[in-house]
Structure formats: structure tokens, C-alpha cells
Length: 225
Image (cartoon, rainbow, N blue to C red):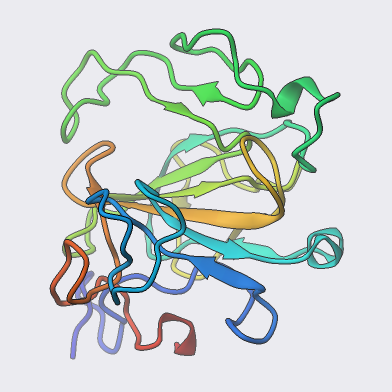
């Protein structure tokens, strides 16, 4: 069967975005709760109430060794930020603290902000977005059904390998996982935007989540591809 981009045998949906496996080298998964009811898609406890993405935890040892973060599908890089301290929390480190305010283009404390640009809806002008992930990449996916973009947070300092405008391929290494920004330990925050800029979607399908099916993942389980 042709995939979303039309190539034979190309997977449809999102691939697992990090080089760790649950119950083996990932230490935990915190599921999204974009409908704010405290429940994950499978009726278990979400990462926390209102959690906007999937948190995939690793150890500090895995961070130091280098754990690759990979593009979940073909796309084009919209935003890429690097250079923040990556072992938060640390009360003595300014890069781990909340900024005093949020301003377009600012990169103060644990937060990075885009300039004002065509970032409203599906590309209308006049919006800016701020991300508390410290070192962050956002990728636009024009050919993935149900997915506008994906976001990757808390990345390792000096590990980001892409810049805005770069075309990336599914599975391509874009950075490494760490604990930059508003973070309590090393992990990848993987977030899906469904219909436009910051229009959150749950990639996991289940009876207790907003996505009753189909899943936005290319494989079941997602890390099996």
C-alpha cells in the first residue's frame, strides 16, 4: 500500500521518535491529557492533568551516552532552538527558571519564543509561540493524515542537527534527548499538532481520550516499526 507521500510501502502515520524501547531502555511514558480529564487514552493516569504531549523518559546515563531523537515523519523544520543548559532542574541555573515574561523572539530562562509571523491557524500572520522545552525542534508534516506538525522538547545542548527550512526524512536523527527547559529529568516531550499551529492532537487512540481512532502512529505498538 502506498504511504501518505505516495511511495510504495512507506508507513502511514508517525514513527517512534526516540532511540529507546519501553520497558527496556525507556524508563517511563507519560501520556497526553489534552482534554484535561486526568485520564490517558487507555483510561490510565495521564502524565499529569492537561499534559500536552507524550513524555518518554531516559536515564542521565543514557543522556550522557547520547540518545537519538528522530523525525517522526518526513517534513520541513519550522523552528529549531539550541544552546540551553540541559540538566534541569537546577535552581542555580538561569536556563532552568521561568522567564519573567513571554515576548516574541525572546529566549530567556527555560523558554524560547518564535518571532511574530505566519504562525496562526494553518499559516495566517500575526502569531508567536513560546515553548518551555529549552532546546526545541518543530517539524511541519504536509503529507501525514491528521498531523500538521510535531514538536520535540528538552533536547541536549549542542545536539540539534537541523535548522528552519531543512527538509527531514522519517527516522532522521535531529537531536539527542536530555533535560533542558522546564524539566524534572531527562526525557523527550513529543507533541502532535493536528490541524494547525498549536492545535493539539493525541496520537494515541483509546476509549478515554479525545482520539477514539484510528491512532496517528504508523505501527502498533509505535516502537515496533
